[in-house]
Amino acid sequence: MLRHLQTLFQPDQYPAVLVGLDDGDDAAVYRITDEVAVIQTLDFFTPVVDDAYDFGAIAAANAMSDVYAMGGEVALALNICGFPDDLPTEVTFDILRGGADKVVEAGAILVGGHTVRDKEPKYGLSVMGLIHPERVLTKAGARPGDAVILTKPLGVGIITTALKRQIALSEHVAGAVTSMKRLNRTAAQLLQTVEVHACTDVTGFAILGHALEIAGKSRVGLRLHVGSLPFLDGAMRYAGEGAFPGGTCSNQRAYESRVRFAAGISDAMQQLLFTPETSGGLLAAVPPASLSELLLRFRDAGQPCWVVGEVIAGDGIEVEP
Image (cartoon, rainbow, N blue to C red; front, side):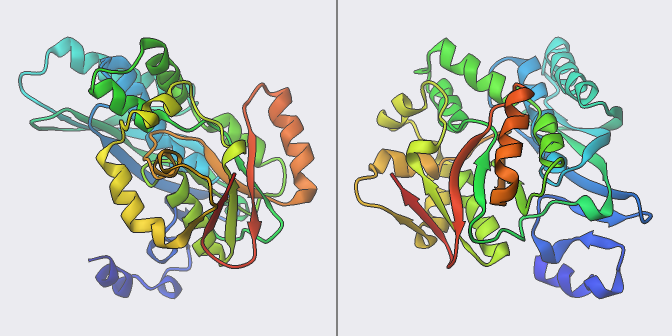
């Protein structure tokens, strides 16, 4: 189907499409004027936590993250809802309230949406963002020598799976919920203050899958350092207990042929790096000349940021201690 669509919509026929089907990026980008381009995306999923309000807020933050991964600001959002007929009204209300609060926090406007009956609750957003056409960040453009930075800790995927298996400690779940609800808006704004060569957000394809997207689109390799990767409290514990979601195995099968692990990296750590994330941070390639200034700006803004690796010549991903 995708190949068929690509033959129908050739980029040279639509010069206003700055990022489209052929790019495989986080969202589509359409130029309106020389000063304004529209970013269009959507995302929705089933509950990852028990609290209805938190679920709505997390789903909204996750959907808007694609706009931030491209350096833009969210302008408008529409609800995407699938609810069972017997879902209590107060639960539905809390899901929608959580999403609406995040849209307001993003400085955007929620302008409606669409609901269908479904056996399992599903919620998310269709999101429109705005950006200057010359400021669009994509997965392509990383260069050897660039630093690789990450703006949120890893581990929400395994913690929410531990929650479903009823083995997660409440403090670990609370940390994961806080991370997932945090918008990538400020991080994106800070990235736009310096030169950045490539950017994406870390979600269902895990840190390794999304790093591979940057590597492939940029025709380079990435080297990640396990010792520099941030993890939420509890993530390592549940990895040791084998609480991996099914998506871990799917990601591992899809990406392991292009990932080279150094000797001594445990099987549990390897699987953790293949584990899907929800509403994760931004992963960006930053030239050395911009790095010190960017880290200082993140620090002054009270925003977390970790240097987790570097871009190298070659292809695929190297994972070092």
